Length: 317
Image (cartoon, rainbow, N blue to C red; front, side, top):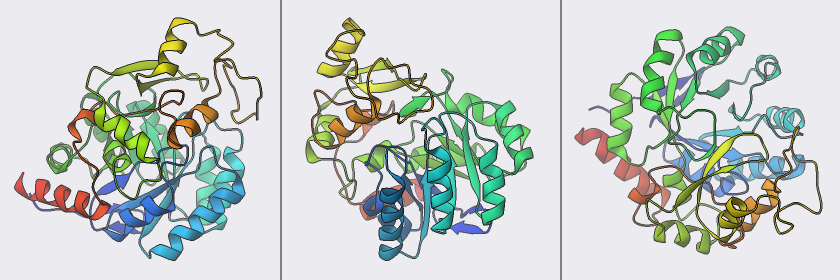
């Protein structure tokens, strides 16, 4: 099939691929800029960053590319409003948000003349988002990495959302290669969001040990964890997930120091510190969120090569 452009508001991406905003510090300027340079939409993960850190990442991405750069911020983080407003002030191209739902972000987006794109898992929420002013909708199913808002597959939810709204709909969850992209486009989506494939890229900011642990893991080496955010997430099995599963109230897990990073925290463990441990290479004590089809990725590639492969897969479909 022919490779379509992705239109979101006044933005036009030559390749209909949004790179997932993987926190903490996995999706940073280096990855986002590389994706934007290839004609996709590069995303900086704002969750877990300070306002100053997020501003610095946006400016660094802008220094590296003139392509489309967005920010993904979880609604669940305490500084959601401050991070979102800082992103608008830095003239970000679009804001993506999930793990909860903000009505205010649509108003802020209109004021800044910046497209706002929510991540949803139901047609009802997609319809409400369009009414509030969403420029597009990302439909995320249970195959996605990170926090999951549903136990239903994306391919089951996608047709319902397509029938409910008249704005671009982007499929997310379980998309690894160009053949996957083509399948979702043929279902009627305007584009896709891909996270895991880009986590295993040369430009991804995660430590080499993080990437190697993913490459070495098998399909069965995953577990669902109950996040302090109040949602479940799929993770790679390691010492931390085993400890969490066996004794969630263990003193080895319960946080001894709290930086109040979330609006509402279940306090079963500190998600920011555990995600950072993994990103920095402590693959046994950290938390490694991952998409369901991670095992299909067999090697670490440059973002350029990933896009070449995606384009080839689409054109051959």
